[in-house]
Image (cartoon, rainbow, N blue to C red; front, side):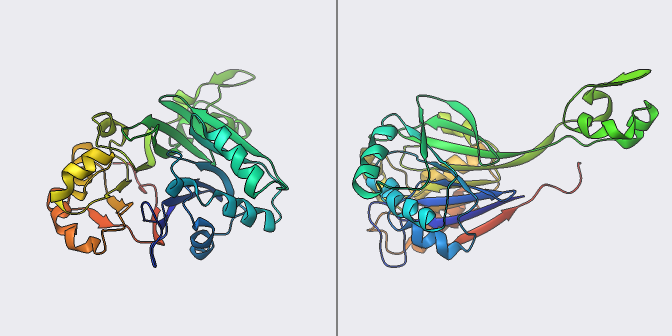
Length: 305
């Protein structure tokens, strides 16, 4: 199971009823936060998921509307008696920026901050998720993220019994280990079915629709993607500033065959995003407007086809 909560949908500056960019994901009690705009500590508390399970913060880039809430988040965690370290992942320069933020705004935290700086496409684990990143097209170094919850292959007890595998070795086989016992041996392929589709969410913001994004977000259950501008007439401005329109985000979703699209990161000038939703929905019908606090639970398909 994978839970998603969109904590903030604004770009550039917070507005009444619209917090800045942040997305919270949860699986198995562990949480990962993507971006931490100003006020994220408030919307995080409003989500009602607590903060104890937060294991990592992934930063798309280092513009203020995506990192301005970090000091507040750190203090919130400190007040919650956190002692476990907190991982931060972001582009080159993240460690330097966080060092200065800590020195100025949070010099005495009761836990450690660790930083992993990204250079190019990479894969890593964070908070129970298999993560991937992709450099995208903005005015500064910026990354899109894809987070997956893998699903194990189905264990076939009848095949295990037919091979004579002792019961106490079944768990090891399910974990992908080869097992041996007196008089026999078995590999995972002997008792496990074919690979099964897991769950995947992608977060794409502050970028042009670069071609590499299509394969990067291919087939995700949920694409959370910026729609900085709703009016197609602002396509030129979007291109100049390294952003997307609603329609460009919808084309990306359609080309990549995603299951669902949430639009987010709205310009402060976009006071009525709903007015432009029909244009995007004509391109990709499963398009929805992101709203602060919007939640979704994704679950594995109950039976293989």
